[in-house]
Figure (cartoon, rainbow, N blue to C red):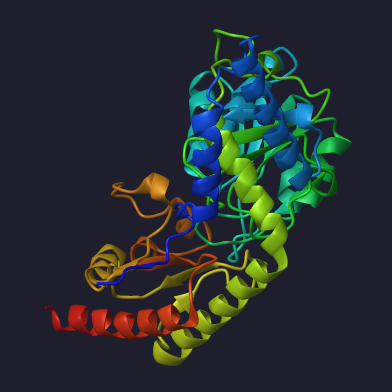
Length: 381
């Protein structure tokens, strides 16, 4: 059975060109980038060239890029690092109610350590309330963290305006751009952020590698101790194969950017038109908000999303019920509840996230299979 993969927000399939390039490089250049001998310096050269490529894509300086194990570590480093370095100035943090689980859990961890957190609500389309964000700032506020694109809804947040609000009060601003990179323009100066998290496995590169942009002059406490890698900001031997995959995926994206974004936009338009025409009772969440071009969150009242997912999986289609980081949790998505869905509505929701290699024929097959799955569930089969 041919498989159709519509869960690209969870992870993407590594591009064959990325895999080939990394295999060629990694077999020949294997040294530790911290070593002073020839093999080490060969690795160091590739490491720094990759850093330059990734920095260029987001409009940063190479020395502002710190490699991490992924988006989760980058988020932890940003939030805990700022919280600790400024603990004497204040202990108040602000974030939105629909952040990724790694942001939410990090703030909850800091709450248990005595920090105060303001959870800023969003409207029914999943967009943060900027007025309430501004009103919630205090003299002891030290960091605002707002994601650029939501992983479940696809909504794009007004990060530039939020960062301006924080900076007027002299407060650092962090942005989780993991889901945005590769699907929309992401430039640190245009957004006005001080820190920004990105990840490789969302853009057709390998898992286990990400990066944190740290604007020059921004202070934070390192969260790992051991060596002096990454200019003393993140200890540990760099994952060179992963970093090479990240850089190669960025290079390919730069060549295909316009066509890739256009293609995903047209596919999502076709998908959502089909959902409306075939399943009038279904609800597309955050439909009126600006969204990244590949993501559709759709609720089916009266149905269980997990059962629907398993039926589609049996027909060769991979979708999700929400964030992969919440898989296995019994509670419905807090993101969907934050935009006003009831627990039952949230439990009846699927997330369909398209990728660069999906086709019109796959969308047609999905819509047909979805109809069959809904009928089967309705009959109680």
